[in-house]
Length: 107
Image (cartoon, rainbow, N blue to C red; front, side, top):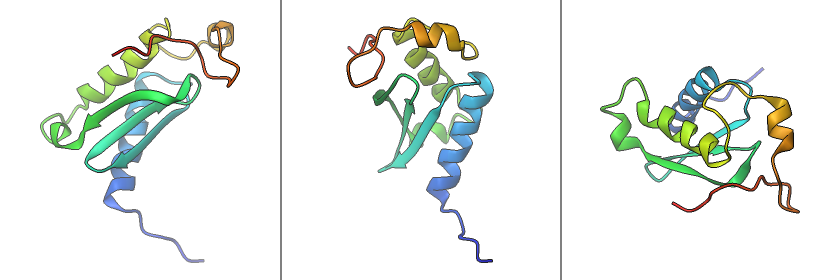
């Protein structure tokens, strides 16, 4: 059985995703590292809207506070608390025809 080595970008994305899962469990967090940015999305809410966090800024942020803040802000934009996923509350959110939750997407 052959295993493929993970790239540094995949490792960073996995680390960021694990932090988000630990702080805000139960949500489907998506993290991609692209062009010096960590693109953070919550797929339970929207695959389109989220936050980009500079990887350069994370070099001086070993506790990933910027990542935790971005995850919390995503939840707040959809009027969810900064806590574990509440499936009932998530299912009550108004949604667009596309299935994405309606939230405050103005920056």
